[in-house]
Length: 179
Image (cartoon, rainbow, N blue to C red):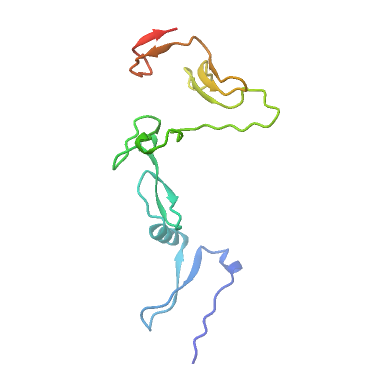
């Protein structure tokens, strides 16, 4: 007598958490269909298809395989792009590292682009860094770089000081102060 396999329609599966998965049995006495729960199915899929390295942001490599990107986030929330090391160690909230020895002079480390429709009168886009001393309710201190139509502007919300030959300490920079 022939064995006739029947499969439920998709509509009947909507009331249960089971899927029917067909496979070729390795043992002739084995049933070729078995059921798994959604939890065990997701665990199987993640274990088989989505392996990766902790703290790396994954990317597809052009062959539909997931690999590690150059973006890394440590357990303290520091995000690094291109930070060197077998385990990258970004020490700042957001860190971009670029080894310039392999780059052309016109290959910038970082570019911020803004597109504005006509008529452009200047002052759109740019880079803004601001500081709040009240938990983010207000930002009374800021500095920005603003591209313009005839010149690029540097804008600050208070006094501006330049520290030449500075040690780049952001809380109290040392060096020759120019105001």
